Image (cartoon, rainbow over all chains, first blue to last red; front, side, top):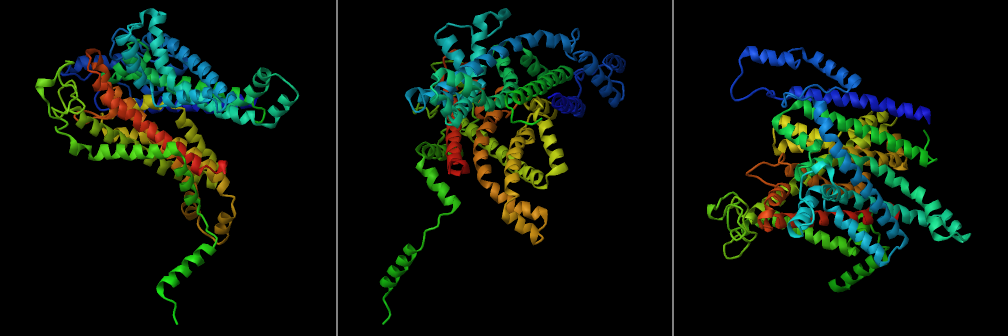
Length: 307
Length: 308
């Protein structure tokens, strides 16, 4: 187990470094800088600004300094657009928001997805099964950017129950719509995977044995069927988490929640490269860490996996 | 003396009937597919959408970028869908005919989906087949590369690409193509691993066929089933990606449009009571995705060797 963790880390660390180098090179390939404006600045001013942001150094040194700063001090440097803030300030402001509704979306997707999948599998070919399958097929074609306007239309414009945007310090009324919009399609996918894997497990020999020796149904499900049935879901959670973080871009923009997605898109339009890179790297690191955790969990649950 | 023509034909048919009717893998799959009601209905829907997207322009009464200033602005009572004015789907906030724009949006979304899936299929299948066939170090290095690329938050990188190199459909294709082949490569590799130990590959090796020829002539055709299934499920994924990017305003640019861009515009106008601006593009988006998902599911049931 220990050597497995070490080996996975040995892949994760170069991946992060490659990510940093790649986004840095992309930034360098970009035509036009963040300080090019309609009125050209005088050369002295330009030189001063470039010195302030370290842009006068040779590019390999910039890249090296940047990487060292990020790796050793989690310092993403100053923002090019907001003169008085660093990228770290931007992340510190936006990330808690994203984390809050992202976490709840994840919980909602997993809990309801698993529940729906298990119920559908146990009541196979009954109306409950058809209902669950119907919901999961319907939700599959409703990605977050489709859900968001529909939810606002129904709950804000027609019913007037919930606010259609804003964050307001994360009060529950403001969190509900983003969470539903973000979690729906993942809930559907989890339900679908859980249903088919549960059906497969319920037909397995050891379940028949457990039922034959007279265990009550709930014990069979919870003690025997759950763990093996969860494996395919677990391997889906890695990619799901990633696209949830990505989906938060739409949620932030549509609901104006003020998470990192909103900063990302704003920075993308104003060519604030240091913020874009900082957020890309942050999300990349999160992705890699989460995949690592999922892999470790997988190895722990499934004894068949050799590491 | 000679039996006449009708008799000869009858004999021929009898002879044919007497033979055991062999069914090819693909014919088998076709029969199974057409037995699946949902998949067949979805297939018809898909054909209808394609006809709408590629020939719908002929039915439009207005140019897609002609602005009718009398109907522009967020006014619920103007620009409503009606046959009388020729604006079947109403007009958008700028007074442009929504029918013509939906036709074009559907077309671009379909094209992005199909081209994106094509890139993924070609690159991914070859990459996976080569990696799986050669095995060993080559396999290790190639699949590590895929692993690393997979853990890149691609939507962010895609946005970064679009911002840096300009927002264009070409860049969108490049960006989508860069990442979409990864899953395909993994699937193709897995399948290749089982195929390469079959006798026909061994026979090809024994008579000295070069490795690349084996991959192209013997491995890739045998991957076709799983590739077809996966690519029909990949197309809706591509459409969603493109719409996501266009929703953020980074994808297809004016005067062109796509379903994602139309949904975005409709969503920003809906508080003025012009619900049709959201409803029509949304309807076509959802129906298209539904159709692709069901056809893909049907194909999987028809071609998946597990269910036989």
